[in-house]
Length: 567
Image (cartoon, rainbow, N blue to C red; front, side, top):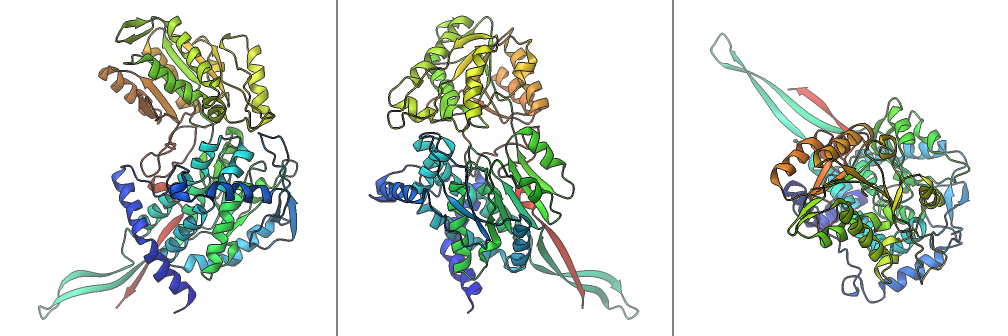
């Protein structure tokens, strides 16, 4: 039995139960998680965290080991938002970006010809290997993105692995939806002797990959936003070039290293997935994206470059761009619990999430509570107190806020003081005792009149939020819907106990293709997205043209070609 056959029969059988569970979860949309999100010693071992930290520290200033062909080493511009020190990691690269295309072309046929069970077994095996490096992934993510420890562990580790497994399972499901072949028999009446006549065809259905896939990563979630695309393209038979953000390479390089090892260990070329690095001063993304050989492009990032990606001819694109996420307050059972939830959503990773809320609409006559109306002024004051209490909490504050990934985001917070709008809560100076040099900024909250539509329709990426007094909740919903329709939105949240008002919001925001969340309290927040259950981005408004992960996310990566043989 050859190597590839063994991969099919051994690796797929090894992981068949896991894949089946993931497929079942996709259909049921119930809770499922293969990988444990708690970084406990019981699950990952007594030394896992320390070993991961040592691996991270030993990688700094050294060459990163990948198995792909290269003709030079490129030292990245990555630096830690916590220490403000350069990583000085050197990655294998090509002087001419066209070489990545050539290598992907060279190896594409073997992966394209491998059956889906072989691919599924190898890809799921790679996730098991990645899980052994979750803590190194955690520290690499912390010190490139500024995420706090817990978020970095979860987002780049178990949550990313589950999103990748989701893509594998969905791809396998769609690629096996129809039979590989069928006998087609059509009755054709009777001949002169009265015998029944038939036309018989052997029909085969060949899923054919679209071509080279380019995955363009972002600086804030270099793994979580990228692995669904990588694995969706790989399970459907397409070679992948990953072009990470130049300031967040290390985390996704770890994923690619394990993928390449798994591929080679099972008889395939490492270059089926390649890392293509660059620096801010010498970008290569456009050259890769505009290559006629690149047929699939996944992109996460700002609107301007996203619009460019979507405009490229001859490409199938999957984008997640910026949006204006809104909250409308109406009524609540527990003001304190509501404000804690909102303040955490505003503060989590300093608002550097595509799902973080920005515009908070509050009726001028206040909101309904079990104790009667809470005035607009008191509602706003309660929000400000809750944000300040979280930010200044010696244990919760630094870990929740993390650090600001980009100096430009940090400057945006400072500039917001000069916006001319009333300051409800000023960004506070927060210190992280473990990282005294860290770029940290707690949320700034400004009051913006509903008439200032230009301000409301501008994404203020980072820890900046607006409260907007409105005549009633319907005015807030109308503005939120208009913003989502014209500028994009990924999430909409409301605290509302009235069923009719809830249905109104669902109908209105549904018309703008924005997901809706009601009355979240406790450890569940609107800016979270659960694998196997939530469709992250709908693809229906300017925030992005694709969804993680609906069937179209994999279906657009292959076509079914029919073969008919007359016997």
